[in-house]
Amino acid sequence: MEDRTHTLSRRAVLKRGGLVALATFSAPALLTACGSKKKALECNDTSGLSAGEKQGRDALKYVDKSTMPNKNCLNCGLYKAPAKAGECGGCTILKGPIHPEGYCTGWSPKAG
Ligand code: SF4
Image 1 (cartoon, helix red, strand yellow):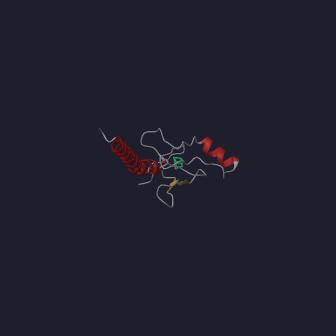
Image 2 (cartoon, rainbow, N blue to C red; image 1 turned 135 degrees about the vertical axis):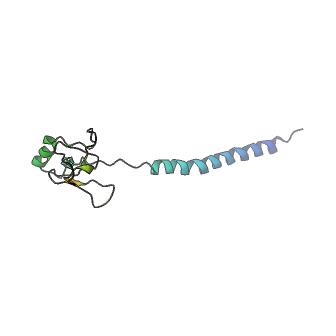
Image 3 (cartoon, helix red, strand yellow; image 1 turned 90 degrees about the vertical axis):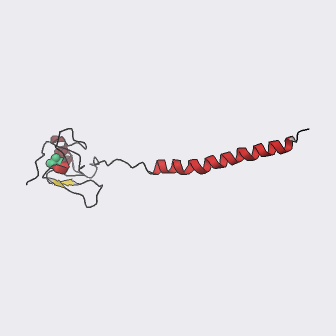
């Protein structure tokens, strides 16, 4: 006669072991996947600007992502680099945060 208690016990142990292994290997992978997703830089927060300053951005059609070939804020002579890499910069003629890949109709090539 087969010893079913021993078989079930071994099966239960294997099942639990599998769950533990799954949890052990899946949790860090999930945490890494969630944690490594870096949020894209956005420079559209104009909440600190006056109505006139917002109008200036609108008038020059500022956008966070340039659609103009070879023209963006980073290669514009009026761009002011941020203090820390990965942050929004500024602009000589527009108030508020400026994305390095942004663009407006005031674009002017860098001198030199
Ligand atoms: Fe960007 Fe326009 Fe300012 Fe040039 S003038 S840095 S294109 S917002």
